[in-house]
Picture 1: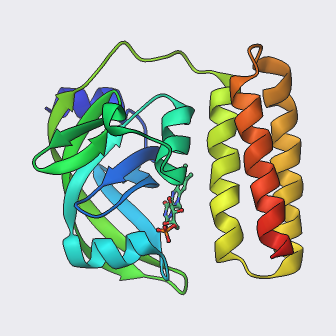
Picture 2: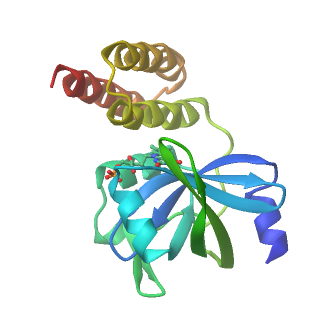
Picture 3: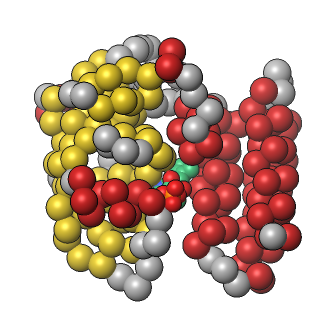
Length: 195
Ligand SMILES: Cc1cc2nc3c(=O)[nH]c(=O)nc-3n(C[C@H](O)[C@H](O)[C@H](O)COP(=O)(O)O)c2cc1C
């Protein structure tokens, strides 16, 4: 079990995973620091409300940005799901059960400490690091931050950041599949700002 954890979370840092509970499936960053795991959840979000109440579920690890996109925009079907411990989860590479508890908070976020257990391999092998794939993740993070930062200047900065990240993705995503999604996400972000 320790061995699998070391393969999945090899360094201290933030890993993007999909958190699944009885009532929500959404991307989240899990922080691995000094042998412990934490999640920082923005207040005033659905996932915050859910985690404060439900406290447990499944963390799905994937190497595919399109699965993170599917989780965020609920673009999945029954065929993409798998039931683990009575919870509907997206099929990624690996799943861990988790339990969370309140640790501390700052102005914007509640910090939860998390314990993970019972790793289950769902599919492998993993994909090699891919530029467009990684850029899509970053773009999706900025997209979700638009809701957090209400100030217009900050929102405009986020859009311009998303656009400059997209340039490398467009050059390196030869089939254009991820590029199309990035264009759509940037368009949605612009529409969100316009109100
Ligand atoms: C890759 C990725 C990582 C994310 N990490 C976090 C996170 O660490 N904490 C958080 O509160 N929201 C994070 N989000 C945003 C949430 O997935 C979600 O958008 C947010 O909870 C607001 O939606 P909701 O109100 O429906 O929950 C992340 C989004 C993406 C795409």
